[in-house]
Each structure stands twice: as C-alpha cells, then as structure tokens.
Image (tube, rainbow, N blue to C red):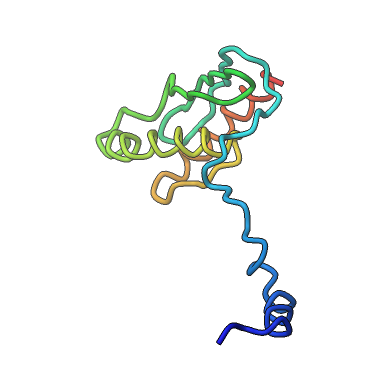
Amino acid sequence: PAPSAANSAANTATNPAATNPPAPTASLPPQATGYKNGTFTGPVANAYYGNVQVQVVIQNGKITNVTFLDYPHDRRTSQEINSQAMPWLTQEAIQAQSANINLISGATLTSEAFANSLQAALTSAQ
C-alpha cells in the first residue's frame, strides 16, 4: 500500500532531509581568498634543528603551490622526517588555503616553522 499523505507529512516534519538532501560540498573548488597573484617568500623561521623558509605561489587569488626554500636537513633523522612531512605540509596549505594547517606528529617543529613562514608570506600577499 502507498503511504498516506499524513505519513508523508510526518516523515518530512521529522526528517527534512527526506525532501531536501544536503548539497554536495566535497567537489566544490577552493574559493578565492583575496590574495594578490604572484610569488611571495616568507621569512626564515627557526625549527630548532634548522631553519624553514617557504615560498608561496598565488594564482587567481588562491594558493596553488608552496615550495620549501630551506628546511632542517643536516642530520639523517631530519632528512627522513622532512622528506615525509614536507609534501604533507604543502598539501595541507593548498587544501586549507591558509597557514592554518594541521601539525604533523613527529615533525611538530618543522610544521610550526612552516606555518610561521607561510603566514608571513600570505600576509604580504594580501
């Protein structure tokens, strides 16, 4: 038997998503952030075991790339940690479209220095 009009109305009242499914958000492109287009270099930031300095590329008002100009690499452990952390940090910044990124466990000092250098570069891009 087909549901009655009363049942349909009750279902809609208790479950509004039944008639208005949420709009998909995962496929939306990053929104322009208001940054000026260009390449901006952040200052050197101390990461205890070495320095971190980044350069950010802004195209169409969005972060399109972040490059490490310097990073801790004198010790074998630093090389191993940063070879894994740097791609993640770059991806985080592009996805977040800001320096407000998740820190990487095991690379906390590099992550913090990255965020500091990136924030300064983004400030100069505003």
